[in-house]
Image (tube, helix red, strand yellow):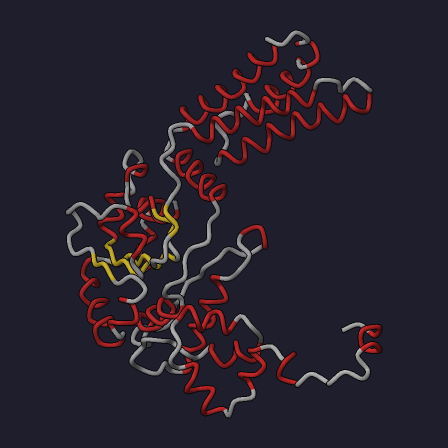
Length: 352
C-alpha cells in the first residue's frame, strides 16, 4: 500500500492482519504438532508446492517422504537432500551438470534412499518445451550417425545455402558470406561432436561477414543470407528424426539382471503401493527380450525398472531411433552398480 493510499485510508477501518497475510505464513502459525500432522498427509506434488512457498515451509517439508514405510536414517536424509540439490542444478551452462554419484558403503541403504527420492517427486513431470525436446532429438539423431554421414550433413547444408544464395539476382552480395562459411566449416566437417557445434560455427562465420560489411557500408542484402542459413539449419535438424521424446513423470532405473529381484523386494517392503500407484504405478522389465510398452505408456508410470542387458540391446546405433527407452524424456535416470559403466560400450549407451 502506497503512502498516498495510506493517507486516504486514514479513517477507514484497518484490515485484519490475516487479510493481508499470505496463506503459507498462516500455516506457520499453527502449533508444530498440528503443522506436522497436516503436511504428513500431503502427496508429493502438494509437498513440492508447499516447500516452494518459503524457506520455513521448505525446512518443514524437506524430511517428509510420502509413501515411505520407514524413517530414513540421518545419513540417508543427507543423501536425499543432496540428490535433490544435484537434480536442481542449472545444468552444464551453469558450470555443474545435473545429477551425481551416490557412493555410500554397501549396506547403508542406497536403494531405499533412491526410492525416497522417487517418492519425493512422484507425480511431477520432466520439464521440456517443444523446442528443447526437438533439439534433444536432433542431437540423438546426430550421435547415431557415422562420422562420414555427419560430414555429409554438414556439406549438404553448405551446398544448399550456396545454391540458394547464388541463384539470387544479386548473388555477388552473398559470395563473401558463402566463401567464409565454407572456409569455416567445410575443412572440419567430420570434427563436429554435436550438431549444435556446427550451427555455432556457421552462424559465427556469417555474422563475421555481416559485421565487416556493416563497417564498410556494404551490408545490403546480407540479412537474407542469415535467413537462408537458418532455414537450412532447421531443415537439417528436422531431417528424418523421430518425434520428440515424451515428457514423463517416470524415473528409469537400470540395474544388472541379478539385482532386479532385490529392487522389487525393497519396493514391496518399504513403499506404500498406493503412493506410486496414484502417480502412475511401477513397471518392471522382467524379460530383456519381450517387446517394451510404447513410449507413451512408459512415460505415464512413476517408476520403470529395466536391466543393463536391455539397455545394451536397445542402445545400438541402428536401434536408437526406434527404442521406446530412448523415446521418453525421463524425469531422472538411475544406474545401479554404476561401476560397470567402466565398460566403454555400455557407458556410451547410457550417457547418450
